[in-house]
Amino acid sequence: MRGGTVIFLLILTLGVLIAIPFNTRLNNAASFATGATVFAGVFIQAVPFLVLGTVVSGAINAWVTPAMIARILPKNPVASVGVGSVAGALLPGCECASVPVSARLMDRGVPQAAALAFLLSAPAINPVVLVSTAVAFPGEAKMVAARFVASLLTAMVMGGLWARFGDPSVLIRRHVADDKARGWGGFVDSMRHDFLQSAAYLSMGGVFVAILNVAVPGKVLDSLGGNIVVGIALMAVLAVILAVCSEADAFIAAGMASLPLIPRLVFMVVGPVVDLKLIAMQAGEFGHRFAARFSATTFVVAVVVATGVGALILGWR
Image (cartoon, rainbow, N blue to C red):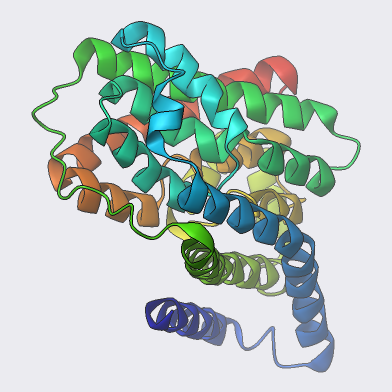
């Protein structure tokens, strides 16, 4: 709890520091009110899904054992990739929970490729994320479909690449996960920790969107909207830096209405599979060498797949 509080305060401070260079555009009541309204809109819409996601992830941590999941996965590494990818849709939770869960799966003998495919798919294609995307993009059913397809393909491709080319010696388990925090006590502690940490990153994303809408001149966003390649690159990098929880990132993307749909799709596909907090968590669980290689490859695959799927389902818009 203390660590989460520190992160929360640091992120809010960062938001203020980011806003300082733009004070010439934020020094009147109208601009401040607009920014506050944008931030509140993003945060309030996202919080119910964030709460639901942390409740489910807490329940998984407290009552679902890796052995239960392991029973449905084939032992063959290649065959298990598809099952591991699809299994992610059954276990709602944010990407913060997917790293320790995948680590526990490996501890129980699940093939690395399947556990890694699960790690990438669980926070990206679960029902909570898809529903939140539908709410954030009303009337854009194709956006929900594009996110599901692109995220599932990203998980499958990465799992297949690891099964074929991965070096098991690079992935080093730093420690065996602790399964003692179970029952109602474990549920409450896990939910509280996940919510505070996820809300902190959501706050950062909301602050960024508010500043973007108020401080950045409209013509700058219009120019980005007119260059889809620049928009894709920008949103991919922002997804890594902002590290917004997957249950809430759709509302951040929806708030950037000046950008085309494909760059915003890229943001929602990249964020749940590679961002700063995930890289740090993967390094802690599996080693720095693994985290560097796996994250870099995942970033490229996610951008390429999201762009391709977006072009097919959404068109170049």
